[in-house]
Length: 125
Image 1 (cartoon, one colour):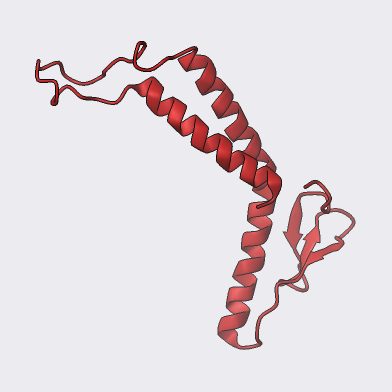
Image 2: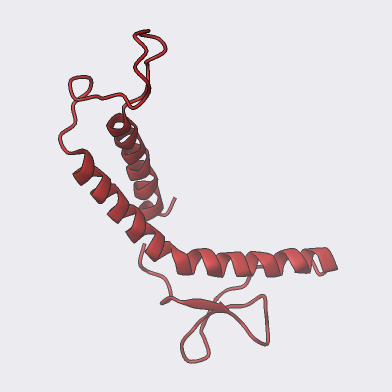
């Protein structure tokens, strides 16, 4: 996964469809191509800008997601459903009306989904 040109990347000043490394006036990283019609050129320029933005943000986004999962797991601790579940809604006495999802259970589910997304991102999928 780390066998790519060093970040950050940038758009070429003289060739705006050329994606370059930000060092030494750049080594070409990629050149999105499109047909030479005004609309295709506009889309190609937008694609190049999007690729640069996404690639430059990727390491920080992965780190932020890892830190968020870790903090969330520390916060919910050894939560075991349903023994440790708690409701946050009103207590009306009506079992159906009082049915509210436990915040710790929601966090655990979101963490599981986030870990799957993180694994996919790190694998390059």
